[in-house]
Amino acid sequence: MTSIILENLAHAYRPNPSSPADYALKQATQIWESGGAYALLGPSGCGKTTLLNIISGLVIPSQGRVLFDGKDVTHLPTEQRNIAQVFQFPVIYDTMTVRENLAFPLRNRRVPEPQITARVAEIAALLDLTADLDYKAKGLTADSKQKISLGRGLVRPDVAAILFDEPLTVIDPHLKWELRSKLKEIHRKLDVTMIYVTHDQTEALTFADKVVVMSDGEVVQTGTPEELFERPAHTFVGHFIGSPGMNILPCTVSGTNAIVDGHTIALDAAYTPPAGARIELGIRPDFVHLAPHGTGLPVTIERIDDLGRHRIARVLLDGRKMAVTVPDSLSISGDQASITMLAHRIGIFADGHRLNPAAKEA
Ligand code: ATP
View 1 (cartoon, rainbow, N blue to C red):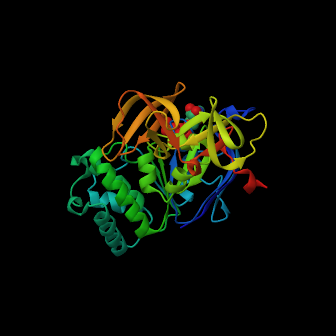
View 2 (cartoon, protein in one colour):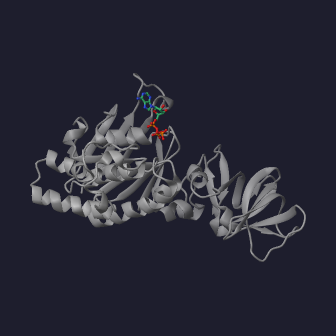
View 3 (tube, rainbow, N blue to C red):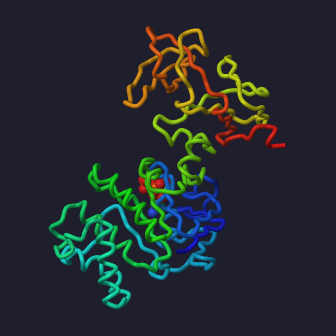
């Protein structure tokens, strides 16, 4: 178990970067605690793989330091960082048996045979590979091959961290959920720092204790799944996490009121937004409720989606699209309705960043 600190780290692939846009990773300091189960989540191109490759040593950052338990490893090659990696596609030896594949990273480090036997049996059992141990990897399905890859990543008991780069991409959808839960269980048993890169929020939220959300080369929030849902620090997190994501409405704020397109919305506290900033109101669909026409802010219903456990209405508030919850008891005829918002669930954002209420800032 090792803590990882990325100190004033930034990376540009192009030489002589001059503006923030030239950086695949913008300058920041991050601390990854020892033994944590982290997911690195963000859309394609936001810098996840770059960050992972800097931790693993495949990429040397253009500035800043990488510290493993306080030791500077910035310029150490991957082999000397004592980490295990699992990639998107299986990395295994087809001509070896499953057992030999799993044993390989241990044999390579001259671990005594009795320890290898015991550890291979333990990891194979965790991944449901025991029955396959004596088969050649070649004949197995893509799912099983990727399980072997996971096993090879997990087998060394002494690693500083295990890095997963979209490891379930090739896995059959019905097995994905099972393997994700299994990885979480394995994390609890092995107690090793795990960093799991994905662009899939379900994968991130089910695997990780802490999710690190990236956008455009920056970490915009690190938090538990609950924190990201309850209190997104940035409009990007609000919109990216949740299905559908948070409603984001341009507004102005005056004391305890937000004004959206001339409509006044009561807030649960006063805010003093910085002058000149782009101000937005954010509220999750769960906390905006559809109501009969004339009982709140007027909206036009575009459609209602029945999601099984609840219904979500797609509505227009003065032409702005919103997703809102339809209470079970509500029946609406026609396309005219109202919405009501839970004041204590409203966030106010300035240039994308969540503001604290004025009283708390003082
Ligand atoms: P994906 O989910 O698509 O893999 P990502 O979040 O992992 O995306 P990165 O692969 O880290 O993102 O890419 C971040 C940015 O750096 C992108 O603009 C990408 O085009 C650029 N980039 C990545 N690798 C290189 C490289 N070897 N040379 C030049 N630019 C690169």
